[in-house]
Length: 487
Image (cartoon, rainbow, N blue to C red; front, side, top):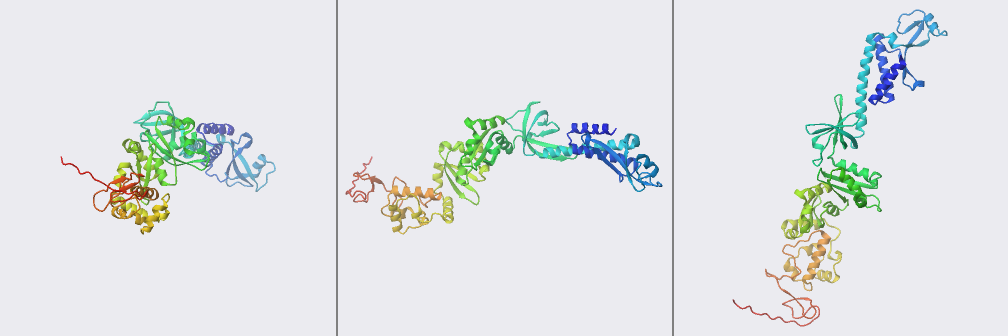
């Protein structure tokens, strides 16, 4: 009987996916439950498993003390009866007497054992399912679409059923009955007697797992995905970083002729994916994040508030912003900065605003790398010598020059001032003058009128009407003006 009982439990446990250790535990508890129901105690009961029979055949024993006179039949046995079982028995010994449940137990004990078995197996199955799928939380899983109700999809996962809510379904995708489906295990939880497995195909981590399956460098840790953001069904942006100098992270994720990234795109039914290089420099990172647009420059407006300005050509503006602002919105989330995108023309207008000037002054107050004009890179020594001779040694003093003060510095042409402005912009992000900047086409005198600039007829050097000789070649100059005729 014991062998048949063990085989029955083993077959049932295999069908329910329960381990052998749990089989033993269930079998032991069932037999002890029946023993207690029949005899009222389990203090003197013990279950052993026959290891020669795969460890699955249980034997129930009743432990009884050998005595001359029996006062408690459940715990004691007379010496004469004990000698029949074991001739060497003596008073005080303990005998292990095998109990046959079908022979020795009444119906109520067997029924109690049966109920206990069903309860234990249900609890174990629930715990086993929960433990198994809890370990798969955050991973990919395969299943088959079983049914649909109110837009929600129920997926056959083998031992149980997964739930793909409508809100976690990509708007780009359609689902068919019995179709094989790859999903991301979003959450595993217990709801009373049931295990709930929530699946997703819209989570950004779903794309991460897809790339990890396609790119060996991600799996072995050579490349790291720093961040990934997604507008499911439309576009994903992923920032990658290489821990090895000999591996180009973007190229590794894209693959030869795009084979790796195309596999992921196919799984996402054609969703666009931008793989960009992560950079510790926020300016470079922001420029990369605005892919596929080409960014001309990035300016940090407020580092504490994480606000930045990206400047692009007019032809790149629509790409940088994207349809309904999608590209810049995803870029904001990817780099965790608030990015404002402007064209070069719009930025030129912004340069002269009082608000931007405050930002510039703040940048100079915080800057400690470049403080003097001589520290500016690529600026000719001739220009720095003139500025220093005029008492302008600090960059802050140079920035604060008005247009009138600029014209009073002799020896610097409009081209020189244009070069100074360009170098300042490259060195400190943004350059601003309280009035309009000096343009390459000329300098300004005191007053509102713009002074005209001419070319020396001998050497082509820029000259103005108040000059009597060219400062470059020394040729004498004179200016004649034609009077305009009245109409």
